[in-house]
Length: 188
Image 1 (cartoon, rainbow, N blue to C red):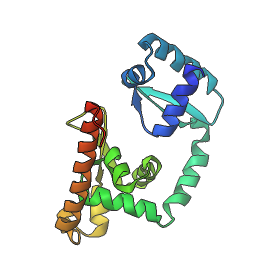
Image 2: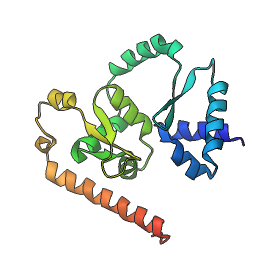
Image 3: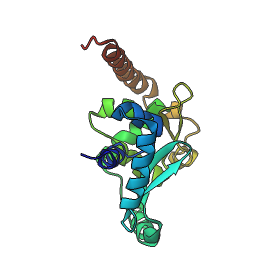
Image 4: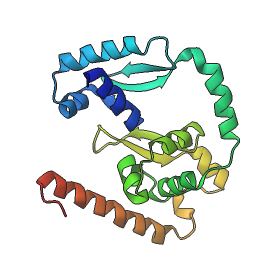
């Protein structure tokens, strides 16, 4: 399988920007090979519904600007729908954790949450920022608009905040321990 296809598959699966350096390390190829593959993938996607977006050493898949009015109308329709059970579950984790990585959300839920986080972000319910502890990942937090809509000033005002937060913290600690064990080669 060619390098362009591998990069395309990774970008589709991740559902968020990835750094060129991360691709170099993951695919075990040179930076020049990645750069060449990105150029080739950009050309392959020309005239298609998706495009390759690049900024500040990161790349991601996005929709072709030619279809912005179509996507906008679908987005408006989507925003008027009720949140799914999966979306509410993810939103609850973001609210109670008030700063959580996608990996932590995935661990707690047991499934990939990329698309749900993107949908919640589009709806203006969550925002993502670069993690101050690890610039390679994002942290998801509730937006001020969401807190305002809920009629609360801070997440500590959520029902049973301490109990739920403690439970989520415990799950996050388990994830960190598993990751450390994997890194040390001592799987649990």
